[in-house]
Image 1 (tube, helix red, strand yellow):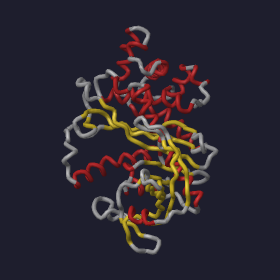
Image 2 (tube, one colour):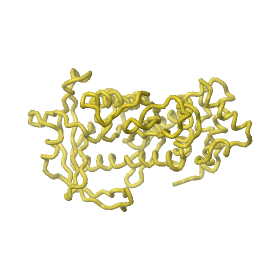
Image 3 (cartoon, one colour):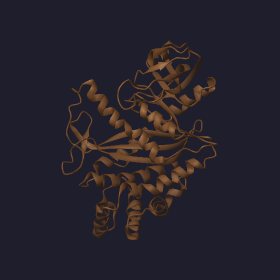
Image 4 (tube, helix red, strand yellow):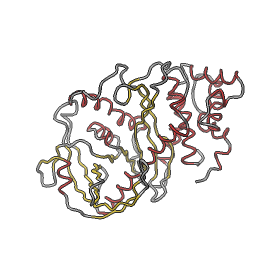
Length: 379
């Protein structure tokens, strides 16, 4: 990667926050100063990176200002990222979404947090979207296209004993974040490009697929719900059973990243695919919506230790197009690494601020830093 642009932190910080509308130009100037200081040493505390106590106090005052909002701080960066996506010379741009939990359970002085995990922890949910050009072997990251911090209900819940109806209600409500992200980015270009929203199992939500396609986007997601589908022969079936009934049609070798101390390894996958139509849910707000046309892709190892069942609205015309979409889905590791950087390299969960609102501000400061590390390309 080229890191030459990151040697000038002041220039980089101006690119990130110079156009932020914070109600006063002095606040914008202060955001640039604080951002450059954090970029120089993202793991350090504010008192250790600002030059003198007056600078520290000014930084904390900045985060406390009502007009210094997360949406305004992030806007210059996301605007630039969307412009790069629209002007990309490549036809396909992936918008990889995922949510990470920021855990502040031990910081009892922080106000405005929601429950995380099994309901006993406290923190902030951070939903991010990376714009990526899927260059084979070396994906190009354009930057953050969007970031939405949110909190769950302040009332703790015992998620271990909730019934199926309660779980569906909770997950459907929280699942709106996926379509809200796409809608915040806006309508995809009508010609000469393809914007694909890529998500894990959490994005398997009918309304998300419907709302995304309405904006001329495409979806590629990992299946979790065993939906009722219409098969090519016009009969009904369940999605997972149908996918698993398909015979192998191609082979693909992928590199499986190492986890939990295990080294990375090559995995040989069998691949099958088919067109289908997913039916709307039988209950809920989406039950009266129209069915959605798409394709399923199943990739599985002979040993049985790996299986992906994907749903896509990107047309599959041959084996090559199916295998390419497996490569696209495999790019999800990039956003996982991004979240790891926030928590380890930027120690975002150890920030000593007094409110969840201030935590949201600091989140974007670190996102700017991560973007420079990942892309190392000028804005």
